Image 1 (cartoon, rainbow, N blue to C red):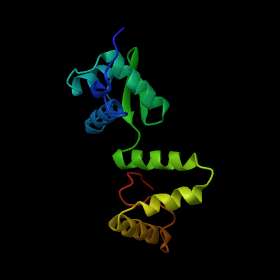
Image 2 (image 1 turned 60 degrees about the horizontal axis):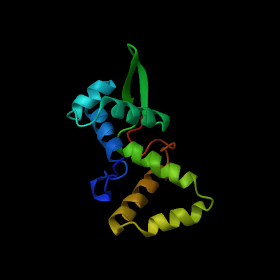
Image 3 (image 1 turned 135 degrees about the vertical axis):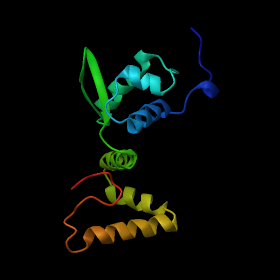
Image 4 (image 1 turned 45 degrees about the vertical axis):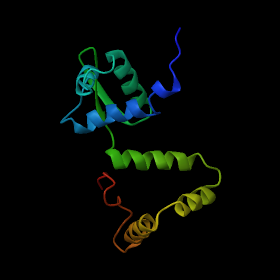
Length: 139
């Protein structure tokens, strides 16, 4: 059995990102074969199917029956998926205060100002806790 050199390995999450990009660009649900085609046939269909199954298990895509298999659709847009991942990481922390404080301390001044603005909007009278602009969520 040959070993793959570290230089030849793909970065973590690259395959999932490619599959999600294909789903986001599509007008509707795609089967694994269609995703494979959108990716230029670089991956085996079984690999694409495995990636889609894992994304489904993670709650990133939904699936519906399509013949003997499934067709997949993204649940969130790119920004929504990032927000979900950030929330998931935060939920793993016993000390949320420290985790959030460290996150904020790493923000650029522009991102910190944007975060302050978004929080102010969410706290504004009549905001009713709706989704933040650009979240991809609908009220």
